[in-house]
Amino acid sequence: MKDIIKIFDTTLRDGEQSPGASMNIEEKIKLAIQLEKLGVDVIEAGFAASSPGDFEAISKIAQVMKNSCVCSLSRALDNDIITASKAIAPAKNKRIHTFIATSPIHMEYKLKMKPDEVIKRAISAVSLAKSLCEDVEFSCEDACRSDIGFLKEILDAVISAGATTLNIPDTVGYRLPNEIGKIIKELSDFVNNRAIISIHCHNDLGLATANSLEAIKNGARQIECTINGLGERAGNTSLEEVIMSIKTRRDFFSDFDTNINTKEIYPTSKLVSDITGINPQPNKAIVGKNAFAHESGIHQDGMLKNKETYEIINPSDIGIELDSTLVLGKHSGRAAFKDKAKILGFILNDDELDNAFNKFKILCDSKKDIFDDDLREILGEETTHIPKVFRLNMLQVSICSSGKFCAATSIFKEDVEYSDSALGNGAVDCILKSIDRISGFQGKLKDYKVCSVTSGKDALAKVVVKVEFEPNKPALIGHGLDIDTMSATAKAYISALNSYLSMKDLIANKDGTMLFR
Image (tube, rainbow, N blue to C red):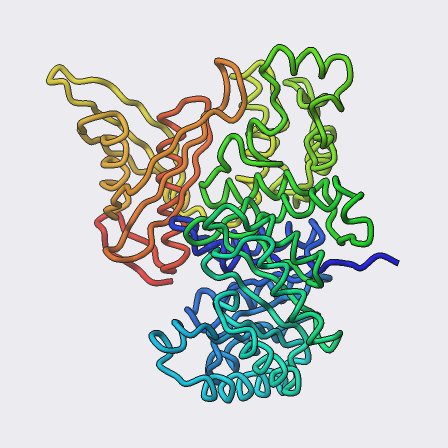
């Protein structure tokens, strides 16, 4: 009988702490549904006490999850724990994850508490959490720089108080694999099946995956990780790297398995990239753009003779079907389109299907070859349920005799068309200014990225923007998709504006007056 390693995904909590990786509520729900499809055992949906938005997102995720356990993080504070319990209340399977720092430097300078005070606080927190939720996880923040004797003392105390999972984080990514192995081995022997030992590694030295795998070999039975290795600073353990290491190296991990459906790894990675606007580096293991590319002549020769000469993972194992990426065409019908959407993992209602199919037909008139990634973008855009207060109708950009650029823009606001124009120092500048004039909102562009969805001169342009609509507030992400890069730019900016309006729950009059709904 193999030991099942629980996969605890914290993309929605720790992953969102990556600079610029914030997600709105609808995007979080969409990602949570995909994580459940991937087979994640525990989804850390957020930190309920941190904001009303996080609380609402956790609560809505808890309502739709059928199998995965929904978890909320909380500090070892009564209000945090009570708020977490309320947020996860609708979930079929739920967990409260409470933590407190245990390293000497954290206790002295951050907490300003003595070790015995930290233990008392931990006992109190776990006891309260246990009274509100049967499944309680306790984390020793900065555990891997903590005294091992003190760790044993506090873990023993929280087990008695009701903790069922004990998380040992390498919070600053400091430890080497052999050190992590030694720590986990000693704590695992001490705990002796009274609770599950979990490992949470950061990637500051590029060792998060190696450290997590070493922890498994030494007694850890839960891995905390994120999609694409997202996370603050250098990120967290990459879910796809851990999973495919276990799957590929059965000679080392023959006694272990997970509940992950590996064919959903690539679709999940793509979804996280699309939502956050953060693409994995091209040479990123497993999901990077070049992960299955072979340029060297020697490598290509070997691949032609036998793929196993240079390919240890079959792309189809993670959901990449390299031999069937060219799909459908202008003569394809609605039923074929619906079937392909289902194969790609999208379940659409009638309105979503109609809208996506219409976009597909329009694309077919402009683009000869339609690829899976083209369809993923169209379907992903249509199934992101952000209210579309504003929609682009028409855009024309021209160069004036003065050297300035001019954008004439037409936008629908709740089915009423408004038009305006603006001058700018460049095409992007004048487009954004014209949208600001029409909407009545002034956005500040913080980041702008453009890439092609697939190859070829007629490839779809995908634009991702980050826009700040209020000073000192997080920038919001917008996505735009079009054959024309400037039209994609306008759509991306409008997408960010719609996201802002959905969060503020207000609409702007044409004169800029804000009306609350």
